Image 1: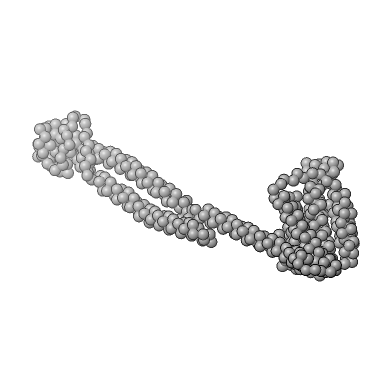
Image 2: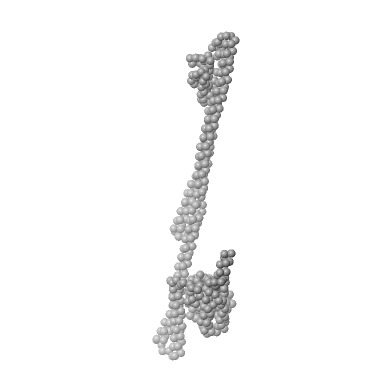
Length: 453
């Protein structure tokens, strides 16, 4: 049960308590008003009886010129209670509350009746009784108030009981989830309590972090295993051919072949160590990005790489739009040279590679396209991992270590970008990335005007 349900129960209870208090007060006002009305009615009826009896006395005195006897007065007051001057009961059975003075009417409410007493002109006391029903009214209102309170309690108790049960069950669910999390199971989700969403979000975050840590550990394990393998292969060849040169007498051609293998594997180890050093430096050092002329940078790289491509009988097609970008010249040169080297390795002799630089809004896109073997779709997700090679035998034959694209991806990330691949097996691959472009002053002013508009 949510917390607002318990709050709702408390609000209902407070409302019921105030309602009961209001009803009790209202019932008191009703009884007080009814009592006043009953007293007024009793006083009015008493005045009528007294006036009637006084009229009889005046009539007898005027007709017979004598005072009526006690028996005659009692006869005329059959439905009243009379007391003589000394307070002795003459007739009736209503107790006189007190002895009133001349012209005074005493009223007394008791039970369901109201008694009124006054003094007659002859000195006697007359008492009349009026049925008010006040006691029955009080009893009825009291029963209604008790019934309301009982119904309120009967309604609130189950709600509170349900709330307590829900809280108990919620705490059990929360404890079960926390116990499972403590044991390393972050897949448990709970519901039905106020902290369910927070607990589930926490469990999901921890689960995601555990997955990331496991992936990082697996990647580190793969990196060490692949690095060990990449070291073992050339070292085995170097040691084997070196031992052959040391222990056997080889003619000139065989010695040259053995030395060539040692040189080739040594170059691969050199390439591997240099790229590993570059990756370590990228992780440890900060590189400030400075304004650079994109067209001139790409032109310089194109001139630099042409001799390397010509040895493989590859031609380079170059198109670069003039613009200024933000970047590190040495890192961008390393990035593009690595991508061009991968394009060379993927291309057949006599093929073509295209280096482009195009303006795309506030970004500058650099792309390298080859028309070689291409990359299978299932391999595209892993080609930027360290030591990962699509064609291991061909890569090693060309002194590859599977670090070129991993290094290129890290340099691209340092420039706020990422490598984008578009490849079709048998048709070739296009790799591109974007850089932040610095607009010309005139172009910047026009953009500022557009933003203001």
